Image (cartoon, rainbow, N blue to C red; front, side, top):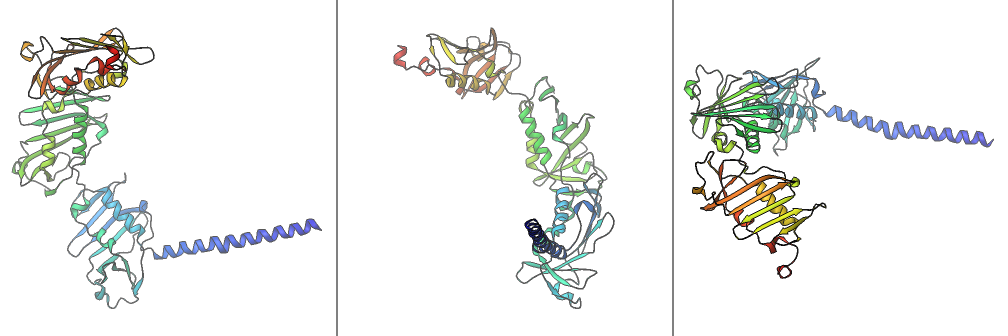
Length: 452
């Protein structure tokens, strides 16, 4: 008997649970979902969209989606589209919801600005075409815009920002990139300016300058140049089908930037021509149109050999060093790293050194950048004070002297330096002299009194 009672109670609980699920949870959720769907202006997913048509009082813009998901302008011009800008419009339409119906009859649509609407929008989907949505005047408060579908008489309101998001020009929706390329895939860069041509190639994570001289290139400077070029936008498109580039000074450009991208080394080339006001005419070899770019971009691209070459004075890895020598006329300081990784002063006295101080000296030398390349092949060192340097800094890795830096004469806030490993003479900031003129008491853990 108790078993039967328990079974009956269990069945009742199951039934109650099902009732709660269907009528208290699932059904209200489905009703809410249905209500939300009914409020939506268009029922579609953005993946279905193949074409977007925007109709204005005096123009029409048609954008078509390509198989790869990018967009292209079809009308009134044929050009690559701005994917982000067009995708935003499609997303806004996908989420657009009617606020309230304000008129059931279409008899007086002129009252709502719908007889001659500000914009009409239609989407072509994979298997169908959406109804055309018309947007008219804004409400007196400006918070809403009156709207209507061509096939329905009802006039309803939508948030006014939707109208603003649809009021676009051809310029707004076309690809405005000055040069379209994959920055990570750039293998070679050529920068031609009048009589100067600089060529740099990428190998692994490093860049090398090939012309006008063979030397290591400044990776960070090239990275900044490529980033600026990749993000640059055309200010205005001035001629879609130019009969001649000569009119814009692009037949013999003042500057030409050429990139080779990817394993196939696809060529991307940008020409900069004559100045027009605060801008310059430009032309991308992959498209016909002439456009304007800002003077700030042109200035950023005007690089010299010095700008793009590596300006590092001494190359080494700080963590690999285990001996430091600072040789001056009055004293020689030698520090050695012990087996525990701590620095010890061994000359002129044997004491524990401050690891942070020794590391600071090494990092200051590693970060030393040339302000000027004085000469690649000096005829003599005496004119720079490098025949008898005031300081010699020598860094060791095991039994090999990795770097030997000579510090010569000071000149107007700078100082001449070179390394034993290279002939090149550099000018660097003279603060390096102060960094290397350290005293023993500055390096050791003990106080000056204990040293005496």
